[in-house]
Length: 425
Image (cartoon, rainbow, N blue to C red; front, side, top):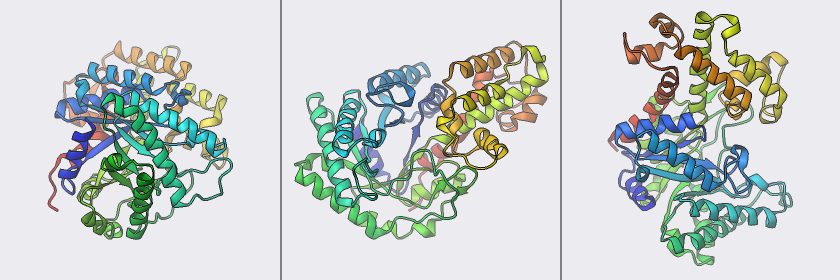
């Protein structure tokens, strides 16, 4: 599927594209698979190095585990397995950056090999982070050399499998999951910087005899000027990124990949596709939408169930986050009240790390069970989930879980509409 994806991206450059779902939550994967199935499109689903690696990542899954997990959910949702494209995002030494570079890179090479062996065919090589014995800032040549070493490991694994992964490179890589501090502006990658990135990577690939793999380098991650932090979004301004178009004119074999495109306005996705950002990454916005729907259902539950029957979802989440603050504490600053608001409502959505907690899962199950046993009045759906009420219409009764799935799909619709619509160049 990797070569087909490459051909699709290059032939549709400036007119169509693909969105990439970056989430390990089963409901997000189910929503994305349903959406792709109903639209007759492939689904590009990516796992990050922090989520999934040979040590388990924060999901507890190795690459082969995630592959089986994703295929099972997608096929159950009606998406044929051959229309599921698995990608590895930010694959590099980041999970082991506290180690010396030699040790961290050895772990990263093993991880990339495991991803390829597990059927991942889109590989983002991200070696931009420093390791324990590195200088504060890595130079482009070091980043490119390390990317080539990871590619070499991937190719060694791919060749006996007759696999041909496509690769994504780029040194101007935003942090996974959005910025961790208040943003005022974002500098767009310059044309000269992306040319330098391309040159040093091409030289490094040639030095390691990776010419065949180089022909499958399909995208470069650049900063188009979009980002989000805890409570604000930097919107795409096409004029600010206009100089990058000249790079694509000179390099028809490449497209751009845009990270952190969550929470943009629908028109921005069309503008990004038109300007050559053919791969649009989305992650936290999907679990943010899931959280919105679950919180709305919890408010409906308060209206319909007595106190002793309720799931108390928000209280359960708050206790879980306070008991295990490692996923949010160093990111959310301010007074206790400001931190509480960020824990629940931040765009960076660090609450997503707590949905797999056993007590939270039990609370969600209780919520769904409570609402499955009653008929949710249309008036309450209109009050707490007006978009779902408007899209389903009067007289349509959705199961509570399907309400959540549909709310997640409302985010995907903006992406799929932009990616499928042919836009005049």
